[in-house]
Length: 256
Ligand code: HXC
Image (cartoon, rainbow, N blue to C red; front, side, top):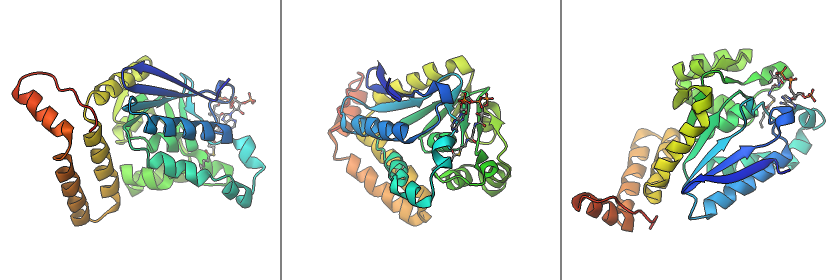
């Protein structure tokens, strides 16, 4: 059985489901490799315009696989090339929605934090408990949490390793939407389907502008936004979008 299942639940939408239910979807090297490959396929496939990343009702992912990590030293961990996985994830060019139910802990929460939009179930349990294992977050957790909710909230949760609920995640600004647990996946797919109907080049440039802008001084970020904006005026989808508005008909965006 694959560790990552792929299906197309709606036009233009790929759903990637982490599938290690016996260990609450703990992320071992196989999961990372399969996820990396599945995301690369989604990036290359023009029919895929948005991706939903999910787990099951018990766990999005309960972190890196502790049994695998327990045996490894820094040299082995480095040689596994885990950084490349996180870099590829961060560079994924299409809308990536995390649909989070159950546990999203450690590397599992970091995986969600690397997505663009988080749909979180009310009863989900999120957190970065690495400190309790004598390590710390290593998949972007300290930095993405800091940037998403500020120093005092980030340190409060990363230093203690305390978990918090989906409802609390919403209050902390760590969720795009908090919904009833049963609604997480349908809502994520619905949102992905609406994104899949929008012009892919606009979405790619919006994502790029927001993510690059988080790392840049305001003036540089505004400059980057402006050049992306001008570039879109050269796209066929710009002419289609504006013509459709003027002609009072739905637009048919092609990603050109
Ligand atoms: C390996 C895991 C696991 C993990 C759960 N399991 N989390 N195996 N790695 N991260 C396994 C358990 O060993 C157990 O297997 C089965 O899943 C069910 O888990 P239980 O503990 O029995 O379930 P429960 O009592 O409901 O408790 C759930 C839990 C707990 C609170 C989520 O499992 C837990 O604390 N897990 C570890 C969470 C964690 O510390 N994550 C951070 C990892 S470090 P068996 O075989 O016993 O049935 C990390 C670093 C990231 O993520 C760095 C990125 C580069």
